[in-house]
Amino acid sequence: MPDQIEKVSIIVSKGSLEGIYPALIMANGARAEGIEANLFFTFFGLDAIHKKRFEHIKVATVGNPGLHFATLAGGLPGVSSVMTHLMEKKMEKLDIPPIPEFIEMISDTGAGLYACKASCDLFEITKDDLVDQVKDIITVGDFYQLAAGGQILFT
Image (tube, rainbow, N blue to C red):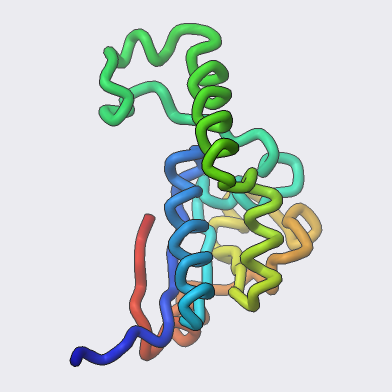
């Protein structure tokens, strides 16, 4: 029998609905299995934990091959909002919580939420800009120390 995974550290780098939810679902699943989980939000993934942005995450419709329609159509006004609304309705039927609720729920299970210092510096984001569930703003080196001995996933 193979060794059981005891820890996962998930890097969240995209700020779209389809970029954030996989990380949240993986972290939630890990915690449900008793696996230690840490989320490291970097670049546009910071939107998932930014107080002014995390309630307004949209589906990326331009250049998204998973939508199966032309890039030009994805750029039309309102398409992103419509696709986001449709996706949120489908997730609601499956009892998948909205991002703010999911972030709180995952934090409550003991998962660690961290922001990337370099990205925060780049975008001039401070700890005050982030949701209360974020434990700290850490360097990449700190993240690797936190992740040591576990699996690293990149979403």
